[in-house]
Image 1: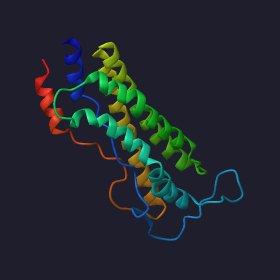
Image 2 (image 1 turned 180 degrees about the vertical axis):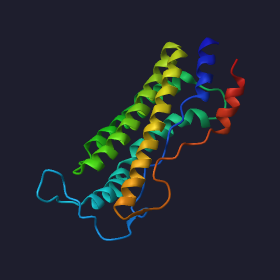
Image 3 (image 1 turned 135 degrees about the vertical axis):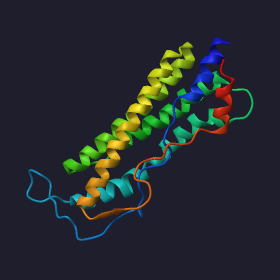
Length: 206
């Protein structure tokens, strides 16, 4: 009963974003290239405008598949019908979701950047992703050790992750405005709505 109660409380906890920021047709130029060059060099091989477009419209969408798979595995607990199997879910998170997320993080960290502004943009995105990865690990340990307190740590990390995403969004919008880039649609990942299964399980918590 103690373990079941702890797991049911998870239904009030971690929400993850599930789609990448930007796409090739969501970020387009509205004017001439900014012509900004890399600081400390005579001429950059890519302008700031071009690098923003590449990072948001090409690099991030190109690596989103593994992250989305990891998130889908995490959310499978909320969408399955019938009795929840916390041990099975823990195994899925440990053996499948976390490795996929780690692979995604490596690819994210490996994205090359030239300009300081894009480096700061990437830094905020990576920090948000790192926090969500840590939250998954907290959830795994919460189930493994039947420790409800770890769920609070997980929720705090998700909240911090959302703050980082908001900072990312603000910086991205400002950079796009300053560099003649028009953004259409979402510029940050969307937070998935709480599913009906989640709400129903939450009402069953003692």
